[in-house]
Length: 184
Image (cartoon, rainbow, N blue to C red; front, side):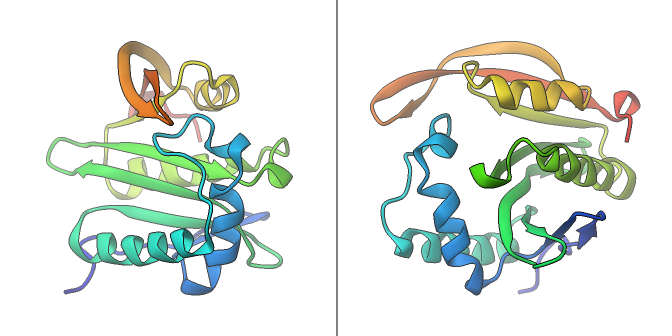
């Protein structure tokens, strides 16, 4: 069974967004094992490389079975995975999807997450014809909130006690961006 939606490659001068490959496991583990990166995720930091290998297998399965787009955010000059981006819960008839992202701490603070997010949003709105993208962010995660707000997302509500991460009950700040409000 082939992927339901083709995985596009997206690029900018500094980034190459491509499929996640088996040889990305060590770089993916470096991101998802970092407690700073995983602080506000819905699952705890990884502790074994095998978890990254399993995640890559899960990504490949999801790509075959679901309308989901998962990108390795790679440095354009080295092709090293430095983060990931995902467009999921894609509902083409309704014109909506959700977005997620992560970036290794060594690569943060350079505008790369904004650059990757703009590439994914432009694809979602211009190529897939979506009219709405949503982001679910822990309200304490100020850098992520600022990131989506800079892209034009609006804070639309708070879902109280939505997640349980490491036995800590967490809220979700819900953000939305309409295609007509997106400024590439």
